[in-house]
Length: 390
Image (cartoon, rainbow, N blue to C red; front, top):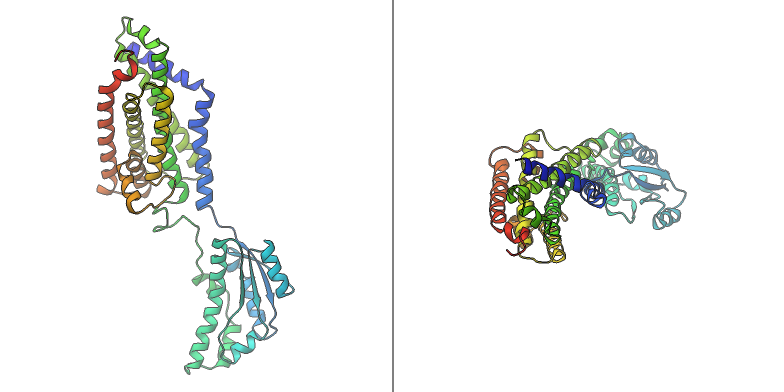
């Protein structure tokens, strides 16, 4: 046992002194989570809208009040423009995200029972175009609905105009819904948001890279004949090797603690209320990653060849499991179910969602089975990795 603990201690010390390794396994996943989570799920800022009201009728003040109401400010920041031409040029130049022109005679058309319409000038950002269009359609739909009622004898056009003029902006808050991308059930990321989604996928990916690092350390000691010198000592050789792998496990646990704690307190990522199950999934992922790395390394004699193949393997597995592109379907999506990443991330997202029963324990059980198989095969193939003449 003393040999086991000593080997684990010195393996941890060796890893902690490798600055490039620490930066790669601790800092890089935090940067990726920040970039991907912000890119795909950040709060959508209000669009800058240029508004030119050419109409001078009774509804012009109503339209102006609508676009400058508090209910609209969370979706659009509106600035008045002096002409239609200036509005168009400002949208094309990128000064405004969207342009709206209220044409001359808009109030008269409403009074005459004609369809309500504005001149809409979409910008370059599709998400902001959708948001502003939704706000504009709210008002126009209200006008057209009143016109339909007037045409069918329910009231009259004059009443429609008067009612339209008194339309308050509180109604818009009831109907206009422009939510945060990536924050609702049924969205691209399922029932988690973008920060949660990429926090999970990057955590698992870099835990698997920890297994790569530990196996490379064993291969280097094999090539330097360090393991052979240990083999001649009175200590049990297997205890030393397993002690070094235990050091890798401890390093992986440190990864989990840093990434989960940092994303919780800095990125506001909700990891759920079952930290015990989160720890279990992380431990199983670390163990499976070590077993996988040993199995793959046993078929390569060159460190460089093993490193290249394993890196590509993890990259492909992460992609197939949806860790890079969410909501993969078809054949690619089905292939993802045969990867270790898929069951690890599915388990962690189930914990985040507060899943119960089979929905929670199915992925954890599959992950435990995969880890057990990989560790068993890895133990059988260990001699190919640590012994020169194996």
